Image (spheres, one colour):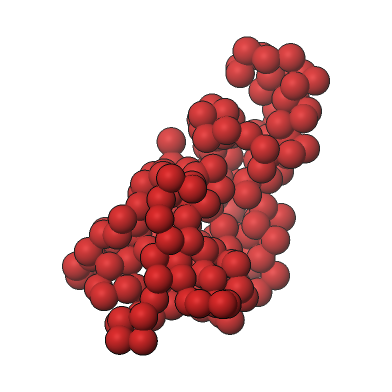
Length: 199
């Protein structure tokens, strides 16, 4: 979930500044910033339209001597948060991130084995908005965590249910669960550890 406060401070904006741009009261925005997980997808998108540029601004002020990590970005890979997307060969570019920024915004204290892919669809709404970029990290996936997984050649972003039966589950309940059978070609690529929306 986005840390609105950290993004807002990067832009040197007050809560009142953001509230005015949103057309709401400062008190309402304080609640939004305190509990962003309660926002609708529409309201989340409105806030990210204002604050989302903070990541680019933060990256533009990186100076020599900062502690950086290079993260591969598979810009042509489209992970489905819907019914699945078949992916082909992808170009990869490396994006440098300030490790301090990753810790402050995403609470990532281990930055090993990170990658970035695009996520499309609304099946993980409101947790992950459509047209987001997600950080994936190779790690153990606990039951109920959001992961990137290949199922029979289709790439998904879903919650992993391990018990009582293996399934991929959407946060948007208008989508059916996807059961994983013994004969399915199923590979977990990593855990979703952060998201940002490109504006």
